[in-house]
View 1 (cartoon, rainbow, N blue to C red):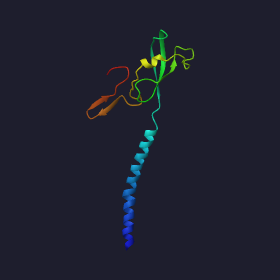
View 2 (view 1 turned 90 degrees about the vertical axis):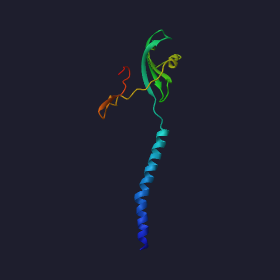
View 3 (view 1 turned 30 degrees about the horizontal axis):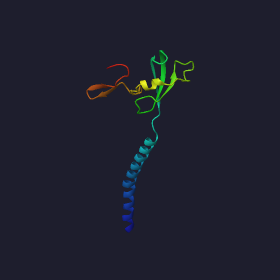
Length: 125
């Protein structure tokens, strides 16, 4: 009859302790994976008057996640080959980066009795 106590203890460990340990371990592993894998850089395009060339250009700026300024100029319409940017890239320090909501998200969310709109880049609501 002593085996009944051992069986009950094994069932308690199997039913209560193992799922909690797996859940805590999963959260820890996912947290580590999120911390290790940093967000990928994005490219934003802007049209402006270039003070260095004296004409209107369209440039693509490479921005790292979380930064307020672009880190590099990827393309520029000033050059014949837009991807071969050979200037000093002084415009990088004149540009500020802003983050907008993803176009995949809906423009509105239904709330209890009202509608909440997300901001749309470029125009005021």
